[in-house]
Amino acid sequence: MGDLRPHPVTGEVFDSPVPPGTGWPGDPATPDTPVAHTAGEVRRLAATAEDTTELDARVSVCRACRRLVRWRESVAREGRRAAFADQPYWGRPGPGFGDPEADVLVVGLAPAANGTNRTGRIFTGDRSGDWLYAALHRAGYASQPGSWASGDGQSLRGMRIVAAVRCAPPENRPTPDERETCGPWLDRELVLAAPRLRSVLALGAIGWEATLAGARRAGYEVPRPKPRFGHGAEAQLATPEGRPVRLVGSYHVSQQNTFTGKLTEAMLDDVIARL
Ligand code: SF4
Image 1: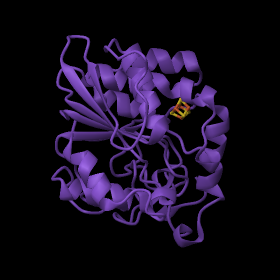
Image 2 (image 1 turned 30 degrees about the vertical axis):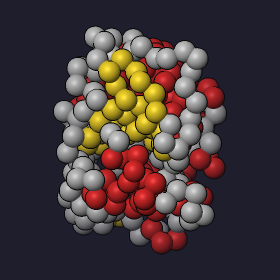
Image 3 (image 1 turned 30 degrees about the horizontal axis):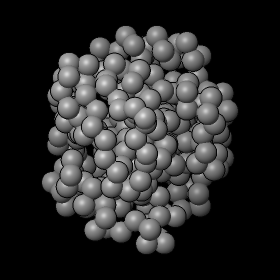
């Protein structure tokens, strides 16, 4: 421990990156949570996670992608944005967030270096998250219109948010290998959700592709040829038990879409209403 800073909600001090099980709000892991160091260990630990609590814990300590581990931890130690220089950085993968009994899943791309990688909660502490949670609040899924820090009181009802890749990648671009290595965490999410899943909102083409690939590996029926991504695109999947699941595509809530008007609030509200 050497770089202790106070959490913006609790005031408790933490090192960056945050060691598992040290009291960070919402940290799903303990010091005993098994750590994946290779793609094979990701597959094994994902496939044996019994529920989303265990899955979140294992995701949150994963170290299988060397480039991403180096990047997320270097941002946490040295690369903080000036506005957050006085805060501790999570510096670990972003676990899923939301209702363990959710019948709706949201699949994003990957954490942001100064968003989830700082706050420890997916889509939290950046402009993308401001957009997403505001829309989810309007639709009745989120308890608060904003999500700025773990421990801020935000909660989701009937929905869980996950990502195709769980570590912040340099320039928001995970490599194909990193996407493949991280895939089993999403596969398991889809297996665990299958008994009640009703719909999935895929954010961006990568969220869409990851959902289709994960659903196929998880034993879902996926249409062939593969449905094409677009804003408002829809595809009908079926769980291994044959229950229909609606996949809806949306442009990602990244600033390059929301600042330019490519994605408007009305467009986002419209796709969320279809879930
Ligand atoms: Fe693990 Fe996924 Fe992060 Fe790779 S991107 S280290 S598989 S959590």
